[in-house]
View (tube, rainbow, N blue to C red):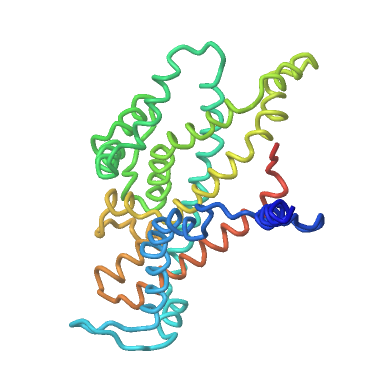
Length: 319
């Protein structure tokens, strides 16, 4: 009997104790470690820190210094910012940048209309049209500038030849201060049209067919469906394109640099904020002043982006 009792006592000791009904034990899996999250987000975080955050901080530091003619830097505090806000060229650059941005936004409704046409049921050659519209996106900016300089040429340009065919006198579009900025903005719209069309096409194809069928049963026409159904359901894509379009327009430089040149008489009417930064940093070798211009542009972009995100709550409709 004692042997049996001892065996029962030993087996009872080996059995795990039952936990209380109100307590649950969590078993931690071997791979559930917070270090694995760092392994996956580490490369992205490192890239953002090295290529975005640190350059921003470095630019802010340089904006409070003044570079010497043979290198080195001297701390001057807010002197560069005081000089910047007293610079009459800054007002002109901000005005030109704002005008270019407003004109560039015209490309958004244009891209929406083209995307709606390309999304028409039964349209033949849809892929070919998409390719034609997207070619400028993958074309080198230098090639785009060269071609459009020939088109805008006042002596032998294609545009003036077409206008002369209908009895309209052309002009030198890129040297006339009243038309140079608009002409460059048109090129910017044309160059970015393909990207916007692809984004809008993706948004249009995500609209359920049942909604359009219900609108047909209610007797809605194409125009009513476009403004009452397509535009509201496409508003998230329109908002995204508007944000990236504003950011891209505020940073315009390459088209102005390659299509005009420094000696162009229309340059004062087309000089943007980024071009002002280029002149200060690369031509005048004034890195501190150039950094102040760059940081001012960063603040402007941040403010406008925040405003857009605040306003999107009133007109963007998410399903």
